Amino acid sequence: MTGNKWSLSLSGDSFTTAWIFTNTGAGSLTRLVLDGSTGLTVFDKALPEPGTAGSESGRDFASSINNDPFTATYRKPVGIAGANAVGDLYQILDVDFTGAPSGGLRQGFTFMQDTDNDLRLVPVPEPSTLILLGIGLVGAARARRRARG
Image (cartoon, rainbow, N blue to C red; front, side):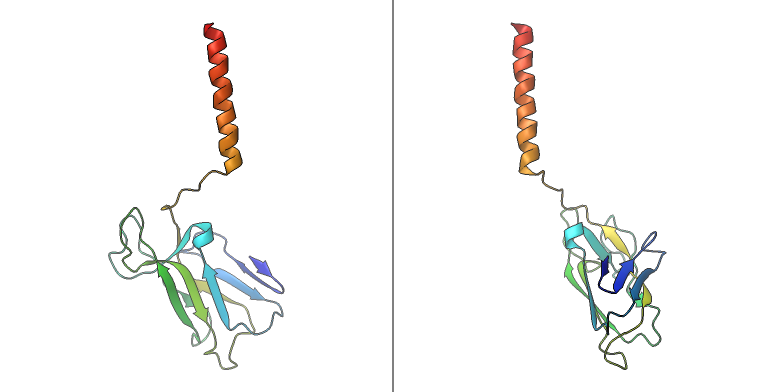
């Protein structure tokens, strides 16, 4: 993800690889809200243990910033495969940096936070895809009738 004078990237597995937030003059960062719901992504915390069935142990938010002047809040807990949420998988990670000495961060930083794919939802085909499928089935049925007759 990129914005005006900032970027957020990850190269590799989110359990073992750090996320990189780069600030090249975007000003003071006071809050970072990551919403995985649109991309079917969940933030996987370490506790409780055992967590959600089928999900490996996660990793809580931890940054490279000295004295960690942040508050990480997880919101919108989810369960998968029809199970109730147990408190280890969340759709939103909200990190508040107003606890930093200057009331925010002006530099870049790295952080660890495990994410998983959210397999609860299956994307619904676009209406145009369904129409094309229907036309194809009608065409196949007509061709079959002609071949019989």
